[in-house]
Amino acid sequence: MSPLPRVVLATRNLGKVEELRRILDGSVELLGLDDVESYEPGPETGATFADNALLKAREAVQHTGLPAVADDSGLAVDAMNGMPGVLSARWAGQHGQDRANLELLLQQLADVPDGRLGAGFVCAAAYALPDGRSGVVLGEMRGRVVREPRGSNGFGYDPIFVPEGLDVTSAELTSDDKDAISHRGKAFRLLAPELVEVLGGRRG
Ligand code: ITT
Image (cartoon, rainbow, N blue to C red; front, top):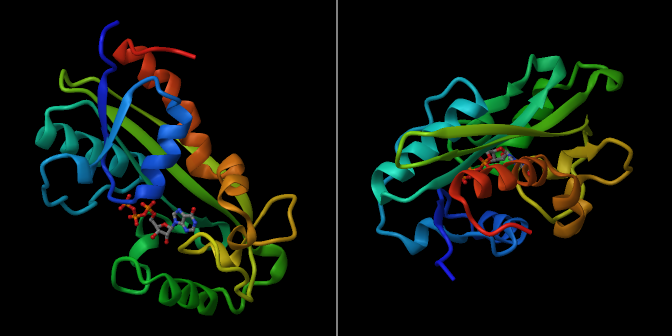
């Protein structure tokens, strides 16, 4: 039997590597950035989630020579014309300050009526191959922002986001329940068969 194609997922977030590994279900050998020679990722300069996901995937191909997958995601609030969007991770100024980010967002939404707090988590997942081929898909989880943070699971804006049809925030969901409905879960599940197809990996 021929060896499985190797693919690198351009993230140091082990949760993402494990989630995509579960979805790919043994069709490819998925590596994280900790499994390849280290490089310093460049700035995420894209105007859209798709631009950034492609940029990160192409950068990983350049550094590793392997087919690569990358994702970019964030929260898009309707009343803010889709912001924080690609700036979600550094909304309050510095990358990854989750509490400061959500507090600033709540302040900005203070005068917006409850009925207009619709929002969506959006994820773009992209692949890039050493021969230059690439593809990108989008996944979204719709819901609304709530003013009182609740729950301690997840990360980022999860404590102030209630997914459509639920009464709990996404920080009150187990990771399996969140994966089943999340923007990232949807994008990865869309991308997986496309990736297996272009790589000629094992299916099903
Ligand atoms: P990488 O290292 O993989 O680039 P990152 O921390 O930049 O990961 P993402 O691109 O996945 O994270 O997400 C950017 C920001 O969007 C993240 O810091 C959160 O503030 C927010 N976000 C994205 N997905 C989220 C989720 O599922 N729950 C809560 N917040 C989320």
